[in-house]
Each structure stands twice: as structure tokens, then as C-alpha cells.
Length: 211
Ligand code: VGL
Ligand code: ZN
Image 1 (cartoon, rainbow, N blue to C red):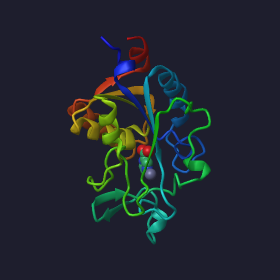
Image 2: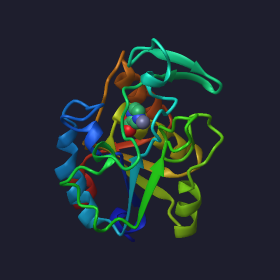
Image 3: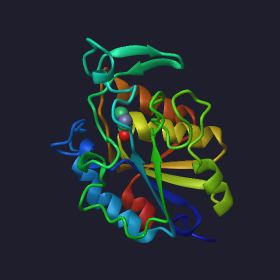
Image 4: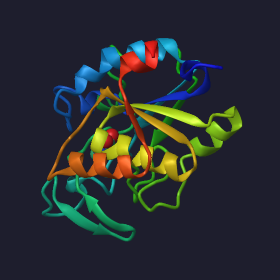
């Protein structure tokens, strides 16, 4: 029987400078995912990395809405949306991968959040829940039926990616020690509840690598 390392695709979500220490939208302890992600990256046959990749003035930035504070809520045509500090602007140092992330074995680097008017937490569907990133097609082309998720942030981009992957009929494993959360207003607890309810399996690096 092929092992998870041969069978599944490792998808490492948004391990970028702006989500790490000193970044514009730093996730608490975000840098801690780097060594864990690197161990996984070394071991998987199929490695996919994502980058949050916004044009300047993106609609998810508080700065694009006059008088809006970062971390406040707004209504977009597609529904409620958190307004973030400017982050992961295309081509900037903040949008680059963490310098210690081992990107060499990445088969696919998928950029999301590029539409000026639509945020994209998920690596599969933008926040309008209709526009696609192309990842589902790529995984289907590769014959991948199981994704193993790591990265930032557990309660936003990792969670939305996990839920969409389940909705697409994929098996999903979340590597808890290779993820960190923003945890705003109980967002981590509700993300964990939603993921468990959707059938996302929780695991850890040792179990994936040596299990
Ligand atoms: C993310 C907020 C805004 C993430 C991206 O990668 O979790 N969170 N953009
Ligand atoms: Zn973003």
C-alpha cells in the first residue's frame, strides 16, 4: 500500500513574510511552522505551495475603505468580509515566502487573492465561493485524492482550504504542529469545530512522517 507521503499532496498555505514575525499581518508564533513545514516538504512526492498575492489597494485592505479600521468587518457584494491591514502585496518582500522555507521541491506555486475586488482565503475558491483558483483542476489532473495541509493561518486560509477540499470530495489531513492561528474573536475554536464536523482529520508531523 502506498504511504501517505506518496499518495497525498502536501499543500503548504501562505508561509510568507507578512504572516510571520515583523510582518504586516503577523500570525502569533507564525515562524514556528517553518521547520515543521520543511520536514514535510522533504518527504512528500507532491508539494504545492500557496501565496496570498494581492494587488495594491485590494478590497480586503482596510486602507481601501475610507475610515475603516483594520480587523473591522464590512459587507462585500459576496457577503461579510474582515478588513485586514495591507499585506502580501504582489512582488513585495512581505509577499515573499519566509526566507527559511524550503521551496525547492514545490511542484506548483499557486497564487490567490489576485482579483482586486474579491478576497480568497481558500486555495480552491475565492470568497465569492464561485471563482476558482485552479487548484482543484491541478489536483484532479495529478490524480490526487488526499491533501495534507500545513501553514498559516489555521483559522482562515488553512481552514477555508480544508473545508473546500472536503466539499470537493478529497480526504483532508491537517498537520496541527505545522499550523498557527490568528485567533480573532473565537475564530480558532469555530474553525476547529467546522473542520472536525466536515471530516477533516487532525494529525501531527511525526504521525505523517513516521506513522
Ligand atoms: C490570510 C487573512 C488575510 C491567511 C490571508 O493566509 O490566513 N488571512 N489574508
Ligand atoms: Zn490576504
